[in-house]
Length: 628
Image (cartoon, rainbow, N blue to C red; front, top):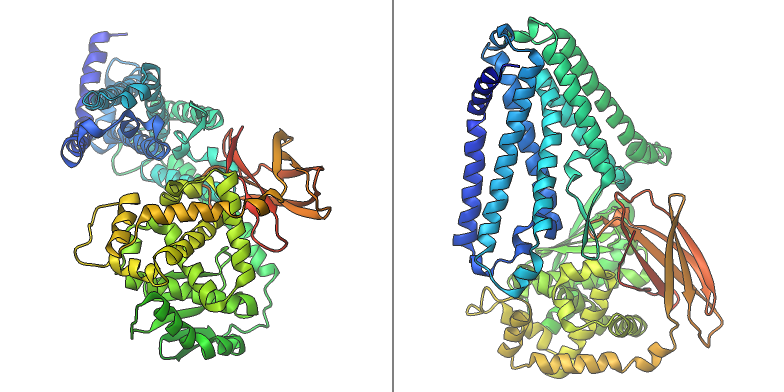
């Protein structure tokens, strides 16, 4: 092996990577500008800079570095044919596999150096923050592990990229199609998430321990190794066609095209069997698609199917009357019509959804006498509240979700006199407040709240808080708070507690007094809560299933309760991928509930247990519990 020639080759390959190095340097400079100009480095902790302390940042970094590695590999191998230098390289007194080795190691060494530089830059920015929080978060083993993980992602990408580059455009097409198919398959079933190469840095946590999915790394490391060997074979074999910039290898083109076609066919088959076939099985070809009708009232423009005209007519007859009552309760009037879409056939759990000056209702709700008016008034309250606040509720959505949903429920209960529904919801809020040890601050951060607790608690707690606001500060206080948000001199950048304290002060109301009365309201249900048995659970895994043993505490009632178990991959899982199962359980007894683990992508999952303490009403769920 002639090391002088290899050094010359190494210098030549570095030259080809200069455009990529410049691009990475620009990204690094932009990151520093963000840290020192858009933000203050003294306020940044290591959790703001470390990919292993921010799950979302880790996923983004994993995908970004994989793509950069692919680009580096493509730049190293594909340019030889374009610049007609491949025949020259083959004519050198250097073995072809040596040239391949130099290209790959040059790319790997360059990328590793850039990763190390980026991590050192983050360490330098972190040095400006010397607080105890930063000191407690940083550790050298974690720092080196981040360097190793990013380097590993890049190494896998180089293996993929080397093979993709050997097929050029066909290789890119094949990779993109395969990647898209893996993403769709993972969306349909989270247990196949390991097939998505972009999930290499999807993190899981066991306490303070950080877990990477060993299956994902094993599978893609093996695939990258195979790709590297195939790329080496194609590089070392004698093929004059590959050396010509105008003619790609016919065999390679056929292989790449065949693989791409196979992936497309598999994707179509998978999509057809999971999405189209079920619809065809239940499709009645003789049924004619209903036509759309539109009717305007004083406050609404309704759209509905002609087959629903009878049920819609009941709602249309009372819609304007209820809307005027909502306006009166909120102290806000408008002459603009609201678009009301009554054609929703989606499979979502929501019976209605509201937007800016429009709302949508499930068709099924039109045929339910108990739900029809409740859902309509609830969504109308959303629309009018958004207008009354001049969109400020949307601007402060994260710290106002409890108020947004609570206000709509409060309006519905006040106007429709839904005494039983209000009692069950109030009992649910008090039960959660006591057994989950909640505080007002928990309600202010909706993202964190929804990742830990059942979504229904936002409605229950919000309605109880808005009711307390109306009791302490007057029946017009909820509507006055909306107007306070819209005032021209309202602070624009306040959030959380400061946002609510400012709005209540503007209407002559004290947030501390409201919260104190709210706490007293929650405690006033302690006697009724004591009569509700406590549900506990123990979890185990067996043959690809989660087995949750539920035990219901003692109760004076001998009737059976409905108990529920939910399992999801993580807090980021969609509602459609949550697996649930229910059973009947008598107080003092135990039952085992078994659920499949087919939608779980990694080593860990989350589960939640629930108790339907009032028949037919919303159950009370525990917080989401990490397991695995």
